[in-house]
Length: 311
Picture 1: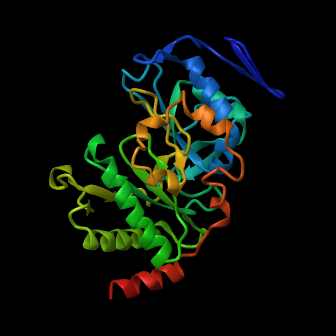
Picture 2: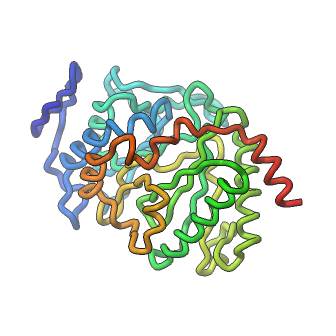
């Protein structure tokens, strides 16, 4: 790879760059060129986790202090070498979503001031059959991350020890964490969301002072919101290692459970400036999500166990 202020070359693909000195994160002085370098450098770890997943892009052409542009359809001016997947709309028609299958794609999107990448929970060959289940543990503010850690640990105990589902955790780049379970694409979204709702209800019944499934913010109080609503057709979750359009340029970062157990851990530890060093030190033995592709489940057995738990 070679990169100048106006061009990035990756093999036979050349990405024309523009305004790389433009500041996207004003408090930190992080430029569009910095964003291009980050995403291109993270591609080796990100792409296997994004393979065949339709992406939703959030662009900030005037920086994160301005309103972002949510973009699902790949514009006609995107080059032909960028892969696309037609995704049917529930109301009719299709949307041509970007598929990230090469480092140059991530670099091109970053040059379009695409700060955030959000990925579908299903792949293009089985769009109506999710291969991931996600629990979003969302606290009311930054002061409750210790409660998030506790809630995630309790959720892990339920999923792994009682239901037999290995799960993986990542920061969201915000206040909370996502807990992922990799699935075999057998059930539809209604079935997987019903399972997630039942599991969340079990957890809330056990810890009603810690957790809630109440969607209205004004009724949650200081409790952690166990959000399962991402488990629906055409819903997305922030991609692993994606940057968030927030002060500090935080990154949604996969963690080991041992890291999450650390009381000194803060979600603000993982940023566009700190994560590249973390990625450089990853190998198969230290990558916290290395086992995810091998740990895929049908929910039938776990569903039976959950049914017995709820009587």
